[in-house]
Each structure stands twice: as C-alpha cells, then as structure tokens.
Length: 78
Image (cartoon, rainbow, N blue to C red; front, side, top):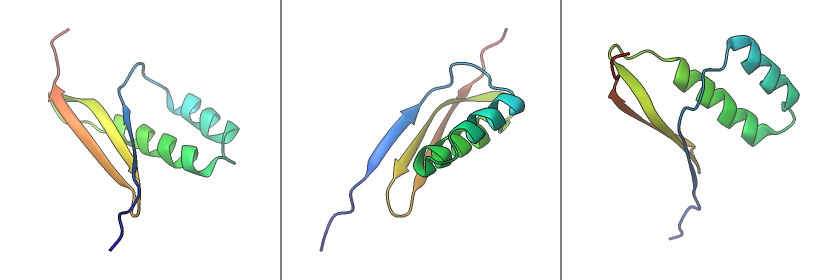
C-alpha cells in the first residue's frame, strides 16, 4: 500500500477578471499545462453564481485524480 502525493493550493478572490483578460492570460501561458489547468478551473469556479452566496475560497488538489473544493459564504450587502 502506498500514499498518493498531494499538492493542495488554496485561492481567494482578489479582483474580477474579464473574459477578455482571462483569454489573454491563458494564451500567454498555454505551454504551462498544470498552471493552465489551475487557471481554467479558477476562472470557471469564480464565474459561477450561487444566489445570495459568494465563493469564499477554492482549493485545487493536484493528485490522482485532481480535486477541487469550493467554500461558499453569504454575500454581504453593498
């Protein structure tokens, strides 16, 4: 029996990135396969809408198979 190594990265939203900016970022770094996967996952996660909730953070674990955990928090009134 062996243990599968895991690298878990936690991300918190800092600013909104437009779809045009996302495409530019992905194009500039398309040769970096792991980072491209992480960026694509984050862009998809942070584009989701959950009613009155916002995404507090996302964790991506680079293991076999890769996993993604998303934690929601109530959206604060503006």
